[in-house]
Image (cartoon, rainbow, N blue to C red; front, side, top):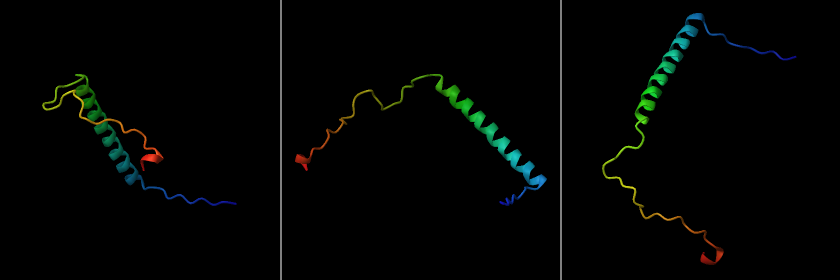
Length: 67
């Protein structure tokens, strides 16, 4: 036989937690809307950045002979 003990939140504490959760969800929704709106413009020109390569080349695998 197994006995499970669950601590229940008091009614006011539960309401406060739900209120905080709802506010966080609403803030997330607002921020995601703003980010989505900003991303609709597609690519943006950033000063100082170009599409040229930066000199990084993938490394070739190192064989046991090179070690």
